[in-house]
Length: 518
Image 1 (cartoon, rainbow, N blue to C red):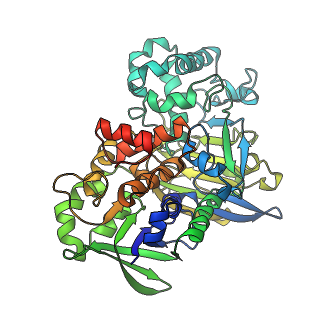
Image 2: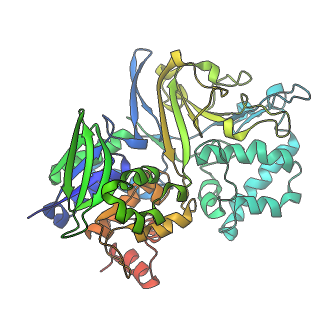
């Protein structure tokens, strides 16, 4: 008799877990799956909004804008398999970044810069902040990143800047106008988190002779999903449905999850769908939603004993410092700084509308980043269409797109793209996981499991690898890309496994060698 698993969340993790189960003969034969997703379309943070603009339907990504094979090795390997031949990728080199600040309140001088030649002209009054001295500071930082950062992998960027403050001629301007904006872009907007960024996180981006990220030249080595990131999520579900009995229910908003205290410890899930309340009972449930949502789902009257005894110590929202955010798809050109409207860049970090009267003369929290779609899509039909992302829920005094020119606005909660963010809660969460491959003494038999990029790192790679880890831990499914993986992919899988389930050295070696733990 087959068992039943319910996967809550139809983003990259939920779809990835479904795909992992379907790839394994034992799992696909012994389990049937129900996938519950709140929205009417699959995607989650990988949601793609089709927008009719300038006579063409354009795939506009709400969250994921670009991917990188070097940083996303498991995603890259999956997309190389024949099952995903329909998921198209477009190379995207020359990632052009621009930063626009308020004018200097003392002099009225414009303060802007970009990492490409057109925005680095010494004769253009807009770019005087990139003085020869400031350019030297940028070069000094990048030379360290390129040649020496690998010797300081566990050092935070904040500590490095404190220790090396004398090495920068204009550190009081260099950090808030170059380092913090670039880190804010990478971390989810509105927060630089210099104390949590280590060179272990940054070296793969800034290192090498053709860096993925740079203050002084366009980044290279990127790709985008030609038809939007949701095309990948949909493909994973389609492949899984062909190999495994699966019920995909869209528009299904889950409100409560609880485990029976007796018998087989089956798990109940309550959700609403088409205006009706529904409930199902499953052998296992995997929550791929963010940790704040998981708190809301598990803290209910039917689950109170288990919440008080277990979940409140590991899942409580106060333990997880998630970042709020909001994304606007719009046609309001006035979102760009009035001092920087050439629209030559891929994305513009805009601090112009967040002025302060004291140095550095802007408030980082109220800044935002806008992706210029004609450049991102390399399609003239995208002219006049923008995606603007905020690192917080904007209030009435923030500069936001004109509502009459807004196509869609979406709020979300997210982590950071590096495993070190929320490291403590991530490494403790295994104590709230249901029984699996690495039990600990006194572990409760809940049959509830947690996956998603909150448990690893906030990226497509983190989402997929977390699904692979839970597939192995809870369903005994080996690493699904054997025998084809390269060293980076399997090493990252092993690293994320250790983040989610701290392992003994012997277990880690076995995992890296075989893709599973006996």
